[in-house]
Image 1: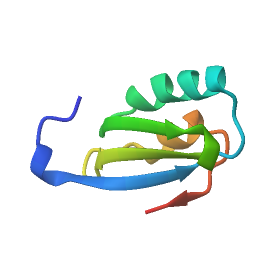
Image 2: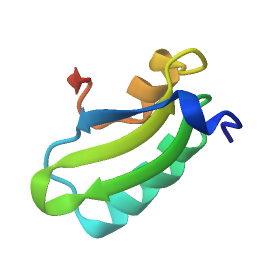
Image 3: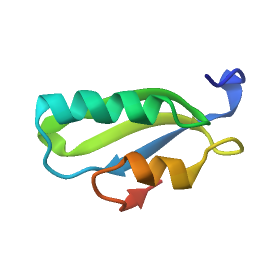
Image 4: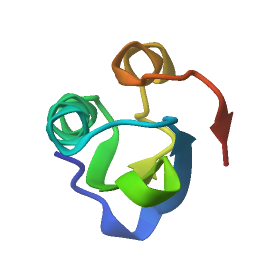
Length: 73
């Protein structure tokens, strides 16, 4: 869990088409990535919206969780 709320930034991860079960698994995986404070997966839009601390964010671990590795900040 990230402790410094003032440093959090929005981060969008394009995940493609997933069903609700996959979205739940993805949210669980993403929430365990260092630097990720909050995860909201929007199945209909194929994105995961995150609140992250960029200083702590482990992008390698983040991409391992994702269905697609295209990331937009």
